[in-house]
Image (cartoon, rainbow, N blue to C red; front, side, top):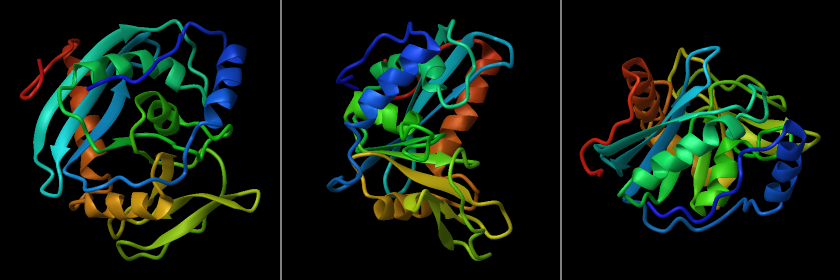
Length: 233
């Protein structure tokens, strides 16, 4: 996969915050994804207290969601664990993993926030700008904002609001489970992001792209390796 741009991740926390504010101005909250035939999910994993980051990207055909490629990368970071700045720990490994991906996904799901972030630039938005791809944040919990609990049925949703602005949706992807929190990453509208999350949730709480990425990231971390599987190098 072609990496459109990157930047230095060797920054202080204060410098990282300033960069987030610059990149946030480049986030697009709508866009035409065109016909979607390939998706990807991305995730990163690390052992608590460790500076080794294992990042993965998993490509799936759409709409049947068959996995066609899985790649990973391992990096060591010196950036501290700071909520709201996690991209500066995980970003270098994610960029390396995407660089190994031969597939060119039409949409990428991230296990984390899009614009539902203190500075409007969660990992899905940050990486979306760098990759210049439509991206969606699918988080397991709220970082900022408030949302009413959606109805109990699958597909129920309620807006995530902050200072009177809708920044995402709480979406019930499976009856009897907690909702996920969907927000725009880059180059996609919120309504389409929610529709795609529901279209790719097959009996689990998480949509298949991020579920497969989460499983693979843990597998790679436990094996302590970087991997390229079918379709990759």
